[in-house]
Amino acid sequence: MTATAAAPARPCLLALDTATEVVHLALVVGEEVRALAVEGGAQASSSTLPALQKLLADAGLAWSQLDAIAFGRGPGAFTGLRTACSLAQGLALAADCPVISLDTLMAVAEDARQADPSVWAEGDTLWVAQDARMGELYVAAYRWLGTHWQADTDPGLWALGVARERWDDGAAGAARRRIAGNALLAHPATFEGLSAASWPQAAPRGAALAALATRAWSRGEVVDAALALPLYVRDKVAQTTAERLAARRG
Image 1 (tube, rainbow, N blue to C red):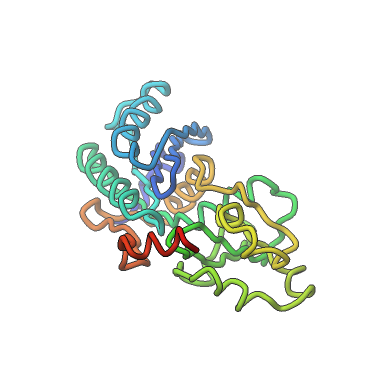
Image 2: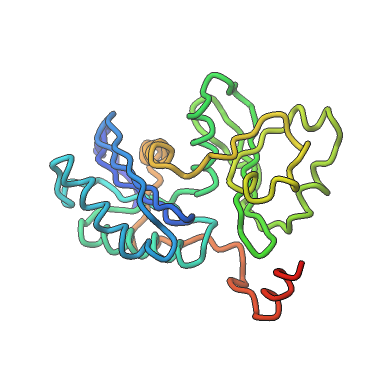
């Protein structure tokens, strides 16, 4: 299912991302954006729907008025990705509207750009590194094209040491490199000296989700709810007891 020529230019879109420890939500009504963040993690499945209902109620809107529902497909926490996808599918089916799949790491990139819009020029590249736990990172690179982001690499799963192996290219390389994401806070030693500019607080916040969803809508990037899928880049989702004990000893 794709947007048609008759699709509204000023859409009503709902967006959610539950890939991290915080649930980020947004409601787009034309040019207006309402963003909300609530507790995620184990609470995501119970906190997200009431928060979405609040966004709509505060705007005086009904579910039937939505043109599409966007969700962060990942990468991120396994349970969180399943929550976002299933919620988006169920709500879209009930509202009889399509779904927009968003790249969670690209949302982190957009959040970093929104934090400092004046420092970005067309062609600038940003690496996003999110903590994947278990000694690993979710990583991807994005290029800013002046009006939108383009993925330079597909999201991947890196062991902690890979970042330094690939990026330890001296002062000249660090001066050119920009990195965003919570991995900078979770593993500071891993990234020390590897970039001249960083956005450790960047996250898939509501305003960033709204921007990505609006751009995707304008390009007709919508799918039938039944075709929406999470993006998993890790097959193994938990450590064994022995691995957890070894990590604590380390």
